[in-house]
Amino acid sequence: MRAAPHLPLLWTSALVAVPACTALVYAEGAAKAAAGLVLALAVIAALADLVLSLGRLDALSAELPATLRCTKGRELEVPVRFENRGGALPWLRYGLALPADFRAEGPLLQRIDGIGPATARTLAYPVKALRRGRFLLESVHVETRSHLGLWLVRRQLRPLAEVRVYPDLQAERRRLSGVFLMRGNDGAHLVRQVGKGRDFEQLREYQPGDDYIDVDWKATARRRSPVTRTYQIERTQEIYVVVDHSRLSAREIRVPVADAPDDDWLYREDSAGGEHLVTTQLEKFLHCSLILAAVAERQGDLFGFVSFADKEDRFIRAKNGKGHYNLVRDALYTLEPKSVAPDFEQLMVALRRRLTRRALLVMLVDLGDPLTAEQFQKALPLVNRQHLVLVNMVRPATAHRLFSAKSLPETNAEVYESLAGHFQWQELRETANRLRHLGVELGIPDHEQLCAETVSQYLNVKQRQLI
Image (cartoon, rainbow, N blue to C red):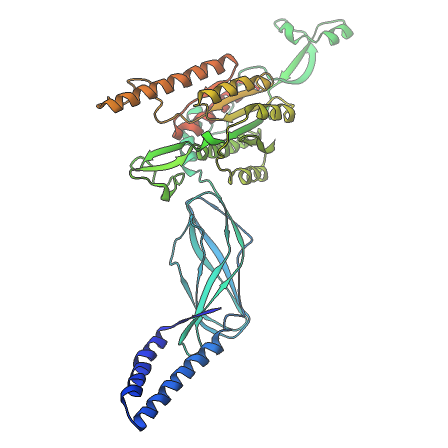
């Protein structure tokens, strides 16, 4: 409990204490005694008001929900419940101690008028989270006036609330809507599937034109007549997104302020550096993971999630449903880049041990470093013979083919930057060719097209029945 002088005390000091002290110094006789008496009464009244009011907020308590969930960049109304078990309070001013990545949307200090004895009030404190992750609201600061109004009595209450801030996918969903419109998936109709499926359906008599590969020779021997296996299209398949959050995932993505969407809260407000907004490649990976989870659920597939850095740290078995989507979201929203090199061999061994059924592995990995790409290529045969692997990364901003820029370089420095970007683009192209020989496609889209490109690859695999 703390106390601070209130405005009436300052006016009392200016109008009473200062003249009384002046009279004590310069007055004589009865005037001096009267001045001393007035000053003593003012001091006694102020001290008495302070002592009697120090416990005025002892009976006040504040409660916050144990867990709050919100989206990055979207307003969250934090419900604060005050319960007063003591005497009436004329007014109460309160404020939340917010983490550095939060911003109050209204006044930092808000006021409640008239809290009666044995009453409870619930109020909304609007805030906005500027960064995803897990945060704690640990204290509420309250104050009210003393009985005579000479002091402000302050107290720090310590309710504990966990705030889970999830990525904002609105802009990504808006970009992705064009993919479904172009594919004609906005309505309910039949879509031609390429391939004959892999799930066994039944045995039937051989018919002219049946492939010899589909002949069941054991059944043919038992029945003494040709028998053919028939298959049905697989409707439920396993999709796993593998996210790398090692050192290369922290690569910055800079977007000019003029080109950034107004409602795209992927970029932190406090990360603006000059004319650019800054985010990381990992943010895009997490957005892509959640978008792909939603699309897989819509397609009726099972979705799983794996994250790794120097080792596999999070593995969620493929399932579907709203509850499973929330589980995946809770597993990835706290991921941060680690300053370690990725261990692909350990990852592939873990995937081979855990995944027994053929699945689609969508790996979000940065292969811009030649050494990292070589290590990835060496470890890939451990899984690509059993599973279908797709690899995607965000194209580095400087990786362009020579003379493909919109404007020609004007200085020597820009010429050398263009040459360096061309060499980087050539290395990525060679990496893609080496992976293609192993049956793995490497996608290198721009950051704003990562989600759409990954979903398109998944829908193509789904339509062609490659898994």
